[in-house]
Length: 250
Image (cartoon, rainbow, N blue to C red; front, side, top):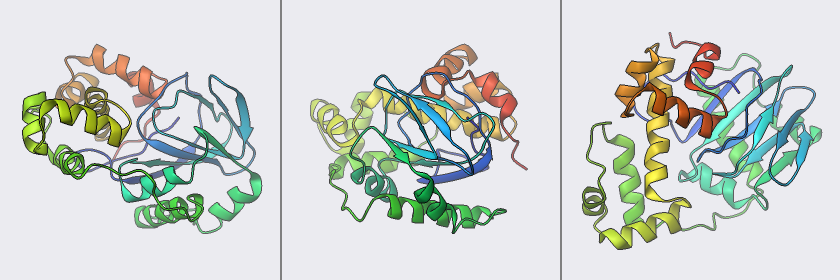
């Protein structure tokens, strides 16, 4: 799976679109939702329940899956599940993995220029979320204090204090209430979410050309080995494997 070039510091934007050759990943799970479309032909996704071959897939957050998109060009869209677009898309899912048939794939790609600019890619990703949401309203409600914390975490530097007392103070909730409200709102506990944010920062550093050790340090990992283990668990490949296939930011 090819990951996007990102040039800005911080975590990924709510909708992030990239295109390029597909690859194969081991079983993994990440908090982002994603849409993967084969421009032609099919790709395969394997979950604990089944093997599905389709023109494309949409995955819910934190669903373990392995993707095989070797030999096809793909369009890959990551959606932040807590963003407006992510919430709309999530509300339209009725299963952890949704298969995209060839007709729906063609309808989605009809509005995507072959050589799209970053702005066109972003606009297309937002429109894809609307189309795939099937007109449903976002059913999940994020606690307003948790939403406040999420905004603060997105803009916080890697060295920020992320202890439970510090985060509870930002949210304006007791520590116990924050733990429960965060999981109810986001779908995963607070600590795995913070690890996911570290991973995003590491990808950004790697895309900017940072060596693995420096990317790990700038993202707040203990060392490159810890970062690589996290990459394998969340992306199905090690950090070095991903870096070798990653295009560099200009």
